[in-house]
Length: 179
Image 1 (tube, rainbow, N blue to C red):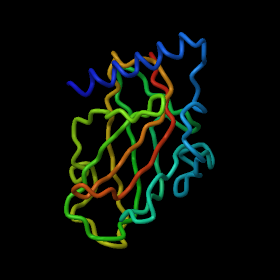
Image 2 (image 1 turned 180 degrees about the vertical axis):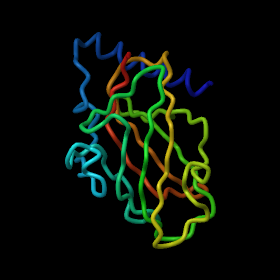
Image 3 (image 1 turned 60 degrees about the vertical axis):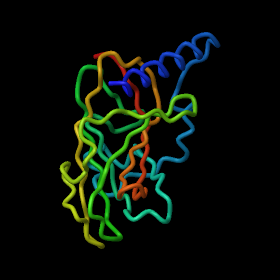
């Protein structure tokens, strides 16, 4: 609950700051670097539309292969307040990992703010743990979009960890909006 309050406060500060400067917030303010093209399921995305960026380090133990966000074919992906948005992250493990934990952050005005997850255990979200080197995995999560979130466009960073070691990073531009 505290993370949600902090996230909402920072979002409001960001929006007020931009309104005071009479500046329009766009996905280009997010500096999400170069988006990469979807690899494995272009037909579901309406072609080969880029919707995500691989922000993993070369030392990370998982290779990101694809990301699907329900209802999204072109960024920024719409996140509708008061609903859940499904996300799938496909990857190949380069090593065995006993337990996989997910962490999500929203980047607002250059600051990464934790986004609360109801279940951070990726092993209960489609990933068969322990992972085995060379095997493909699909992480699935239904992300609740709270009605009290401010309407805005931001970058969302999704990480998968083995204990405290980052194994995968991806980011996608999203727009939180009313129905």
